[in-house]
Image (cartoon, rainbow, N blue to C red; front, side):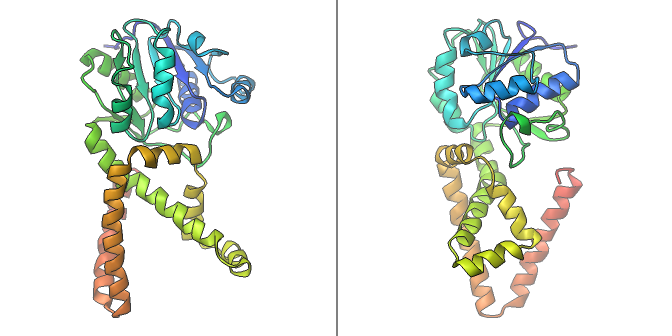
Length: 294
């Protein structure tokens, strides 16, 4: 049985990689929804029109959310609260609101007094993306076989089911969890790796010129992977670290302790400790591949 929103219009606020990809996936799969888009940046709106993303690119936020049964906030986590406040007077009673941000405790905390009383806020987070941003970065298959985490947040179970059904039709696999658990898991699987990548590439930037040139010229695949991650949207990642500071700092402390252990093993030529750690980490890599998340 197909779960229903109050209308067949979906409003997407923020036309970056995620927002554009949602619109393109709906179009590609011929789902029975009308998609209205809005972005605060006029150049982004114009680019989205030129790329024919969605059914309508609106000039005003109020126009985009008017009559929508589902509103998707697809901007940085730091923008969720002000956007929620701005759309509240214009959204339909009974509409579902979700977001796509990488932190959840801060989003729920910052919006708890802003969500319109008759609406259903169901935070979400697609575990999909690339280092590229903007409307042109979007593509219809971005969510295929990727997890999309859902936080029911006390919302009506039928509305949660309707959202999950839509996301499944976009190709995603849905999983429900709490905000606290989400932020701790993402701190180690996503946030800390990005922080390490930014740090390593930043170290290369600060090297003396000749050495820096050769680091770039002779970069191996490992360093190239770090540069790809470090090329991600700086606004988005600034907001992620500031809004998930507690969990990120906890994981940074654990990482620092593990790094000290490795330093000691290298200094004292304790090859058995290095071999044991590298063997355990290789097993983790194999389990990721087996889970289809490579």
